[in-house]
Image (cartoon, rainbow, N blue to C red; front, side):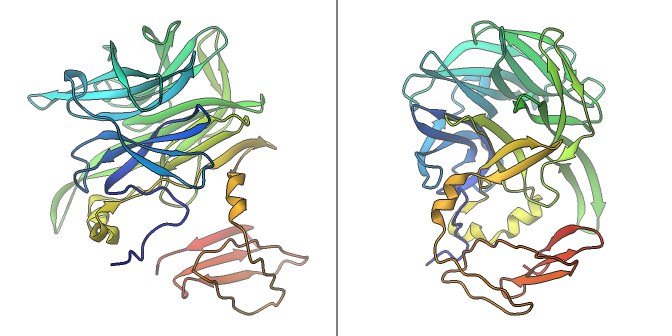
Amino acid sequence: MENPYKMSYHIEPPRGLLNDPNGLIQFQDTYYFFHQWNRFRLDHTYKEWGLFTSKDMIHWESQGTALVPDREEDRHGIHSGSSIEHDGRLYIFYTGSNKDNNIRKSRQCIAISDNGRVFVKQKEVIDTPDCFTQHHRDPKVWRGKDSWWMLVGAQKKDMTGAVALYSSTDLLHWKYEKILYSHDLDQVCECPDLFSLGGETDILVCCPQKRAWIRDESGEREEVTSYAAYIPGTFHEEEKIFVPEGERRLFDAGFDFYSPQTFIDSKGRRIMTGWMSRMSEKQEEACPTREFGYIHCLALPRVLTWEKNTLYQRPVEEVFALRHNARTYMEEQGSFDTENGQFELLLMRKGGDLPLSLSIRNHTVSLEYGPEIGILQVNRADS
């Protein structure tokens, strides 16, 4: 049976449940997008790393499994992390999870590859410092001026979120330095990242999360709320401090974007993708792609720039190669059809402050622009 839900531009798993993007990198002229994966079921009971590769960021090929939970330090899950290239080798950093008597133990682990396919786990691990709970995960590593740095999402003993900072001289042995940031990060911070844009500002990425027990007519259940955000500022390496220079802002003002991760490619672009879902368990159970054996996808890669004190996010330019059959509409009212339901829409306003109303997908999705508020709104309530 043909799958009517198959995505055209987004990375979907061949089967199972996909979530966080991990270890994004361009290694040996190939783009590597690792990801959290349960290849056995459509739930979150099992975690390994899957891998997609591409030469052009348009056509992606699933390489199947990259890392599996096969040793004591990670036997209950290979959780999120990052990767870097050093001396021609690919270094993977991830959170290994295990549980004894239902007590969680988290360690930051390392694996190394010479060819991008075989990953050798190292004996060196980072144990969680005493000032944190075992909600300590998602290491992001980058090269600084004089050392390697690592951020880890954390929860302090007072059950509030934080970002932990580590340093290393050899990528194998790491020293815990301090809490880099902890202002208003709910109960735990996930998937931190830190990078510079254009030499103008540093961007600290955080995903605050909180959990609460909800009781309603269907019984008692745990509800998780979280979002992906960033804080502009300056990271001072010598003092090991991050100085915010503005309020925390959401990456997307809409829906379905979480656990973002970035990397620099050979063109010098800062590229980001994220997990295109924040579904509840109830929503996941109703997702129609389950009928075809998979659920969730990654968002279209985007290029980040800092312009006029604003973070700009634009699709990678490679997708422009997909453009064809351009058409122009000048009428104030009208309609258009597409060959296969796929299209790119460029809206241009030529003078005046007229409102815009546009319906697509058989009127199930609408776009509205009101000049009095100056915001383009997307409504998918009927989609």
